[in-house]
Length: 572
Picture 1 (cartoon, rainbow, N blue to C red):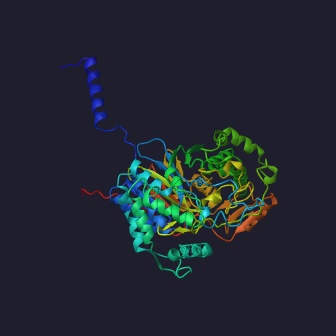
Picture 2 (cartoon, rainbow, N blue to C red):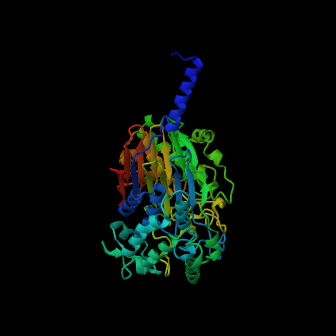
Picture 3 (cartoon, one colour):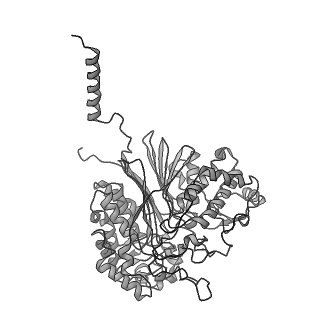
């Protein structure tokens, strides 16, 4: 028997169609294990438990967020906000869930100023007037309804149990409670987070039955927090303490899906938080400037010098241009462009520091308040299907405003301090701002939170960290470490330095720079300031697509846990 050319051709086409219908010719690689890194062993375990129960990375993110709200009240919570960078396994693009707090509708531009127009000390930080409208409860419902595979109530169960049964006080808890002792003593929070008005002893059990009940209400769905009896209790509690929340504030709150900022640094695709976070814009701007140099071949002093000068300029632009995209127009395309980076690069003297005062003026420098930057929290999740989450959450200063709404267990944020309460007046992290970040009713305050994806043909890195104004520069240095070949599980421990335009000084962790290098940098005109404390609490996940290996990293400065767990086949 012989076949004609036509018959052979038809046979070949039918064969290829059969293969195509049976399975993909080239299946996309998947991690084939689950990886989680968080600031708390309890949160990491909860995330893995949810994955083992059939949930995906987004269900795990719900469990982790809720558990962190219970066990890290100094860092994040139901009364706070944050940014979730998400990407589904079958999608080519990421999305950012903007769960940032909003200014109450009764807020005013000068609400934290005295009759002479000067900031009232502590008013934007301590107490109920410092609190924006929270976004985390709405984010949990959004994750469950649009991305998760489990009921919201199932994913939140570990947090509800922990709130009722309690968790033991750690050394870090004691440090944060001691730091905010006076603010906690001033409200109902004292009866929950302190013991007889004092910092609890190590191992003391913190139980939060009111919060457990509130979590149960939130677990019922979309509007549990923002309407009904809980909403009424929140508003009445806030207003009784001379706050300005209204039921309309809660009813109007929405999580917004935004397109993340994306850029290229050599062979890496950088995806990071978009405004109202300044993180992605500032990060990509700095990387674009450094890309103009053969960075890895530079001497150590030149690497540090170029980092400082890139930081200085990106933070200057942050102060002038960035804010809530729903309220102001920003030249983001320009700020993240390679052409603009070449302009900035051309302004840098490779052998001499540029005084911040010589750059285009945003505002005059003032004395700053400072924080060590261990509050706020971050977690990274990659599930075995390839779904990914990088999320940074906050209530701002440790223990937020220090105010817990009576009967609800909800500790409120003090994110209103992240607005520019007066042009040129720094917030608690020393960041100054202009009118772009001024207080407006319903507006979202500018943030530095920088959840990030870094992807190449061969690898994927999910990372982020707390640290106030220093968050973005920590992520920058992690990416530079990744580029230079530092193992993924060691990136979180890299030493750190920081410059933020004003104040005009280089802050660096104790031991980051040796004395000889400090002297050389000082000779170039840099004002050097060694910090006695450490900062940050980075949590990261890395997937080597080439080998299939998953690795995780948790910051040695913190008390977190990072684990990879293989998927157990229930059919075995």
